[in-house]
Image 1 (cartoon, rainbow, N blue to C red):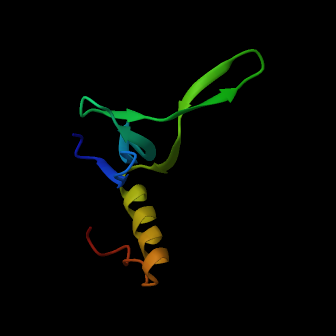
Image 2 (cartoon, rainbow, N blue to C red):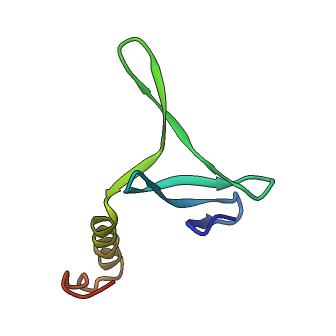
Length: 89
C-alpha cells in the first residue's frame, strides 16, 4: 500500500493519490490493484499527429503551494476560513 493513497470508494477500490514528480505535486485518480499495488488512471491527449497518454491529475504546484491549495479546498468543504499563511503546517 502507498502512504500517499487514500481509498475513496471501497466498493470499487478507487481513490486518489498525492503524487510528487520533480518537486511538483498533483492529485491523481488511482485504484488499488489485485496485488495490493496502486495503479493510476490515464487519459489520452490528442496532438496533431499522435495521442499521448497522461495521468488524470490536478496539478497543485510545489510543496508550499500544494499545501495552501489543499487547505483552501478544505475550507471550501467545511465552511471555515483557510489557515493563515504565516502559521506552520
